[in-house]
Length: 110
Image (cartoon, rainbow, N blue to C red):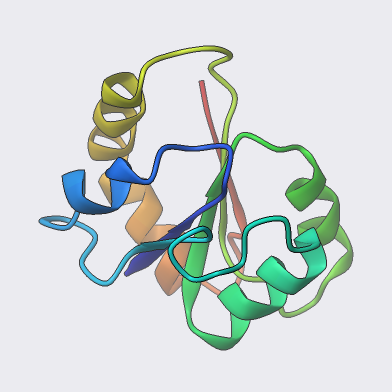
C-alpha cells in the first residue's frame, strides 16, 4: 500500500515510512505542488495511492466520488513530523484496510 502525502505534510515522511509503506511519495516530489486537489485526487486514484492530508477539501472530493482513492485525514492540529509518523505507524492496520477495501474510503486520525 502506497501513501501520497499532500504538500501540507513534510516530504521526510516518505523516507521515514518506507519500511511499512513502500512506494509512497509526496506531491512535491512528483511535481504536483500547487496542483488543484482534483488533479492530486485523480493521480492518486490512477496510481493506487491512499492520500494523506491535513486538508478538509479532500474529504469533500471523497464524499462525492464513487471511485475515490483512500483518504487519511489527519486532524491533530499543529504537531511535529515525528508525531505524524508515529500516528501513521500506530494505525497501519487500519490504513491497510482502507487500501484493500472498496467500502472504506476515509480514516480520520486524531
